[in-house]
Image (cartoon, rainbow, N blue to C red):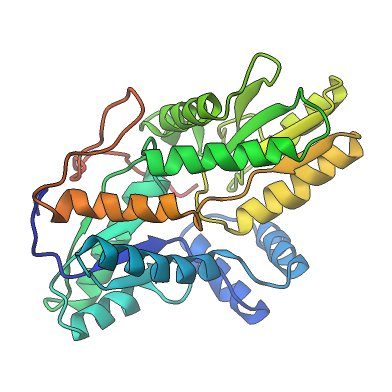
Length: 342
């Protein structure tokens, strides 16, 4: 499907998914770790973390609200595309949603992935899972084209900057260090894609629009690493960095989760609990910028990205960075996966 086509019949929002009750945690973790060599004790540790917050991830609730908001946005823009939602690892699962779309007569659809970055984990894996789900359904499955990565879209950058400013205003000191956090990747996978460079560019764009000065130093950190402890991942870890800053005498720290535009469990656990606890032990003031999935500008961004593909009169892709607009169709060798399960 080419840019400017008008024969799409639906928009599919695709996310990682998360449990919504304690009895959903185990099957969720089994899906997430299928085919990977994750030690049993590590799985038990993660299950205990979910138990500490009631067995519920916020991501599914956020996606439900996003579906409603995007439907309103598309109606206002005149396209009126129905909006569906499917997850990789928790109900509603992609296969079930695509089967529903097929039963409803949808033959061509656009898919928006709830991560704006290019990597095997944040893009290629989602595309592959969509293809697998369509294969399981068979010839009646919709043709699904994926919206391009969009790490520097104004609808992502400005809301994140505004949420960061709000977080900074909640701190008593005016010399806070700002940490821009994103999901870590194995170093060998990061070396094969633009993920790290895109996160760096996003952080810089958000920092600029938040008015950060030399007195408000910022840097990129990483979180949520998993897998074998002997495999190198992107560093520094956010909690380790918070601890180091405290030891260096920094009084206040604010974390902006630019890697997670939609609120999820990893934001809650890694930042609101672990990083905040490290800051408290060091006697530091701590604030976390809110995620942006409920911002009208973020909703409008999804509509704009869809319009790139559906509106022949669209003015062109919106991008604030210098790295160039990613193509809609990824090359076959883009963002390769691990040589063996990590």
